[in-house]
Image (cartoon, rainbow, N blue to C red; front, side, top):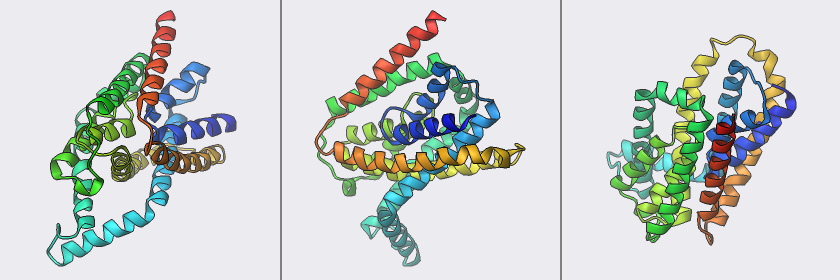
Length: 273
């Protein structure tokens, strides 16, 4: 991987991790479209690093919220009143929403890895993302605030996140759509979706780090990867801020159109080969 490729892919990861257009799809499709022959071990290491950069960005953006939730959650355990405080309750809902993705990921790990090697499968899953986004706008009442979430809502959104482990199904798109279908306002659905991405990104990063230990020569690659990491973190932070502002007044249809067009282009190019 070259320095330019690292920076370009870092920008793409930063933009697409939190915008509802699937970061995994873009990291699969961009090298495919540009004809980049990036070695599998380098691509794996880079993908781990940029996921960590996205994690750093979302933690930085929601730092105060996280500290409030964590403090209330711990206090609730200590005082044996785990659900008395609304912020403690939010902590438990975030944990519950994380469980389906963990279970689902372990059960179908091999199938997901095969999908990552298939641009056609990624394109088809982009259509699925477009369907989620469109359905959420069409069917949602968009009245509830995040404080009104119950355990059924959190579990539903968690299942939506579990489905998004396939490349092309946007994690933010699926979880925001899941929240909206349960009646959340767009911005409230997005805030919960971003907060619940933290444990799953952290878990994915830790598991991938175990695999990194088995790969040699990481130190030699870092000078190329670090600029991509830094760029990805900055762009991720800006993408979160922009999307939350955008969703206060505008619907998700533009992202559904984008996913549909990108999926169609990939299918045509794949069939042409």
